[in-house]
Structures are given as C-alpha cells and as structure tokens.
Length: 70
Image 1 (cartoon, rainbow, N blue to C red):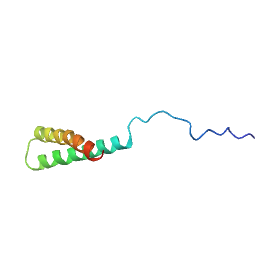
Image 2 (image 1 turned 120 degrees about the vertical axis):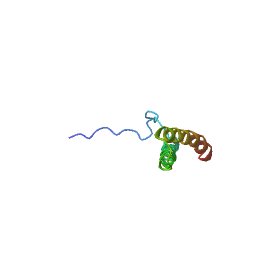
Image 3 (image 1 turned 180 degrees about the horizontal axis):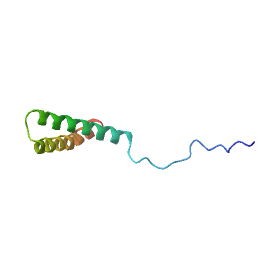
Image 4 (image 1 turned 90 degrees about the vertical axis):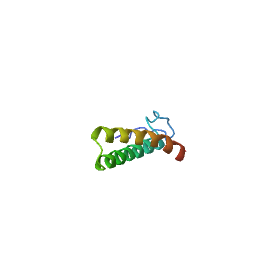
C-alpha cells in the first residue's frame, strides 16, 4: 500500500467567486429589502408598492453597507 503524495499547503487554488465581505453585504441587503417590503405590505400598501419599496431598500442598503463594512 502506498500513500498518496502529499500536496503542498500553499498551492494557490482558484479565486473565490465572492469574498466573505461581499456575501455578508448582499445577504444583509436582501434581509433589509425583505423587511422593508414586508412592512410596506403589512402597512396596507399594494403588492407592487411593497416590491418596489423592498428593491429600493435593498439597493440603498448595499451602498450604505459597502461604506459601513469597509
């Protein structure tokens, strides 16, 4: 029985698709957008207005979170 050849620990792999910082910002923006859209809908707004409010809230929060988590 021969053991497999050891691989070097410092071997560069492919670059990640998203960095951890980017993933955190995007997940937080989605959560903020869902909260804003949900509150708009529960407040009596039509579904279209709730969707637009959620999209606007998530888009604006991406910019804010980008500067805040820099």
